[in-house]
Image (cartoon, rainbow, N blue to C red; front, side, top):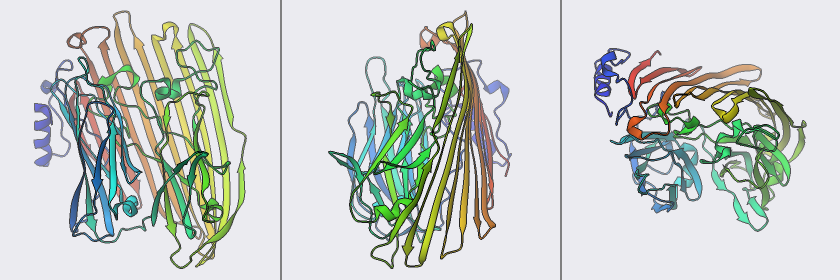
Length: 530
């Protein structure tokens, strides 16, 4: 912890006072040259109480766009099957630096997509951990390692990003069966292809979709179409949809999360202590491609394409690396089947521009896709149907010169995966809802103020033979309000800001509820309610 108030907070937590709270006298009137290290309300990864082994993946200092390259060898003393594998990243940086995007690949498999906090002059440290058990197949053999956090260090931007990354392996069997194979797409002259094992019985693609930093696609949800008088343009407005196609056929659709990096919304003071959800551990979008397994299991390469609907033609701005997770039928050399249905509604995308002293764009968009297929497995014929419905509504308002710029937006991604056949019928229904409500204003006194709330919500229900067997509900909400003087040296900004996050998760497996609050870089509350 970077500040004396943080030390007092830690002491109160250790001595069991419940909610740690800094005294009012400990909160400065404005941001200084140091503040509390980044922290989030999200829960740490649960770790088994079994034998563990550690492997270092990377020790790197990023000052430019040169990747770190190394090698990985499986751990000794923990077997080759693990109950859990946990990635830990510890980083530090000081001085002046932008937020930077990064990735970590093992054997070509992307196991982490991340961004960095913006530092204080005196320096900060941060910690990220992630459950990467699903990549166990990759970890069972020696692999090349590549990591990059692209950075610029010069006379102005002085922060060198120092990271240490490890994997911790816990002996034992995982609670759920992990994928038998973890595949990546192959680059060919005709595009990217995928060749799956011929006995695949479940196939899930995951896409780490992120809008790039520095351009309009970082703030894709604010883009507008002509003739609207706004600085960030897109041919069809702000709607974005991440699509997966197999051999030219639409196989999956999803709504991207509106990621906000730690310099986002022109106001780094919002994010110095509490980052936006997923900023340090970008969650991949998952697509159940099992209905296509009957086509993919012929042993030949198949063309797989990932695209982002709504990006202006010829414009870059999105990164969409893909991993493919495959579960195999151990009792069949080949599993045959067929795709039986692949139907989509027309994509609705309407943006209405209303000019005035306060310009306004109302957007309403959505799409629905249903795919079905069957496989003749060693345990009988299994049918899988995936239905996914996307919807987006938003209201974007701005004044002349964009001195006031605001957005109120909601995205929903509603998915049901149904299985049946020889095995008992089952269904998993997942409803994801993302919300962003924010406004930035620049007053006549050159004070820039941003007020923003960002919501990440999800509900999951699993049913078998018509009975509910598991459920969960998540609500992770960030809110912040920060202001500073623009176009002056750093020491004259007189920045102030408050922020908070509450992460609540309830379900058939228990409860987690934690709240954080900050003021001027001091952590003023850290409370757990479960």
